[in-house]
Amino acid sequence: MKNRRKFIKTLSTGIAGSVLMPQLTASEGSATDSIVWGDLNTDASEDYWESLAKQFVFTPNLKYFNNASLGASPIPVQKATETYKKMLDGFPSKYMWGGWDEEKEAVRSKLANLFSVSNEEIALVHNTTEGMNLIARSFDLKPGDEVILADHEHASGTIPWEVWQETKGIKLVRPTLPILPKDKEEIVAIYQKAITPKTKVISMCHIVNTNGMLLPVKEVSELAHEKGILVAVDGAQSAGMFQINLHDLACDFYVASAHKWLFSPKGVGVFYAKKESQHFLKPLMVARGYTDESIRRLENYNTRNLPEVLGLGAAVDFHREVGAQKIHERSYALKKYFRSKIQQHTKLALKTPEAETLSAAIQVVEIIGKDVNEVKQQLFDKYGIDCRPMSGFSLNALRFSFAIYITKKDIDYLVNALKELAT
Image 1 (cartoon, rainbow, N blue to C red):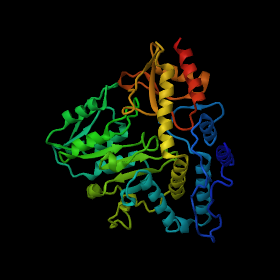
Image 2: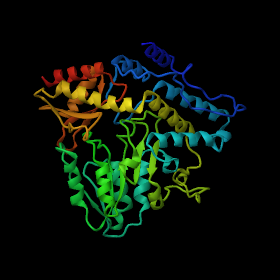
Image 3: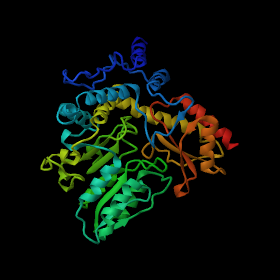
C-alpha cells in the first residue's frame, strides 16, 4: 500500500517531480527525456489502473474506446514534448541540426530495447503509411512476380504496392481470410496455399484493423523464409499493446505508428528492418548524407519535428515504467472481461476470434438487427462513447479498443449501453 500510494502521488503531480525537464535556456545546452517515477510497485489492482487512467485527459463526458484509430498521450509525455518545443524555438538552428543527436539516438536505443532488437535495426519514421511506402517502393520486382496481400490489409498497406509495383506488371495476390478462424493454423494454411514459385514478398498485418484479428506472423515468416520470400509487417495495431520480440517474430520488416498503442506524440513511427534484409531497402527521400550505409539513411529528412521524436522517447519511458508485462497482461484481461459480459447476450454477436493467439485488446461486436452507423451515433449522442463502425466484410459491427486507460468500470458502462441499445 505504501508503494501504491507513492506511485499514485507521483502520477497525480503530472510533470512536477516526475519528469526531468530539459533546460529552457539555450545556454544550458543539454536535454533529457527520462521519466523518473521512483520505486514502482507490482500492484495490478483495479485501483492501480484507475489511478493510471487519470494521466490520460479526455474531453469531459467522453468515453474513448477508439484507440485503434488514434491514441492519446499521457500528461508526462505531453509536457515533455511541449518542453522540447520550447527549447527548439529558443535556439532553432542548434536543436534542429546537431543539438539533439545524442537524445535522438537514445530514443532509437529505447525502441530497440522495447522490441528486443539492435539499435542498428531501428529507424525513426513518421508513421505506418510511410514505412509501407518505403518497403513497397524499394523492390526491383519484375513483371510476373507476385506479392501476397490478404483481403483484410489496411489501405495504407495495399495502396503502396498497387502504385509502386502493380503498375509495373507485378501481380498482387489477395487471399481471403476468415472472420472467425478456429485456430492460427487455419490462417497459415491460407498463406501457404497462396504461395507460388513467383512469390517474392508477403505483406501482412500483425493485427487487422477490421475485426482485431491477430495474424500468425511468426509462422508465416518461417514458412516464407523456407522459400526465400521476404515478409513485411504492418504493426500499427500491435506495437505497445502486448510484448513483441521482433527477432522472435522472424519477419524482415515491421513498421508501426507509435501514436496508437505507444501513446506517443502524433506523427512519429517505428521502422524495423532485420540487419540481413536492410540491403533491399531504398530511402523514400534523399538529402545530404544519403551515402550513410546505416539504417539512418531511411530517416534522412533534413528538417523534421524533433520534439515529437524526443516525445516518443518519453512515451517509451512511460511504457517501460508501467511495465511491458503488466500492459501485456492488462490488454488480455480487459478483452476477457469484456467478452465475459456480453457473450451470452442473444443480440450481441462477437466478430473477433476468442483465442488469445488470435486477438487481444481490440474487440468487434454486432448488435443484431441494427445498422452499425446508426448504433455508433446513438452510442455517442446518448452515452458519449466514441468507437469505430466497421461495415466492410459484412461485419456491421462496432470496434472497441481497450487501451490501458480503459478501466473495468468503463467496460461496465459500455456493456450496459450496448445492452440498452440491443433491446
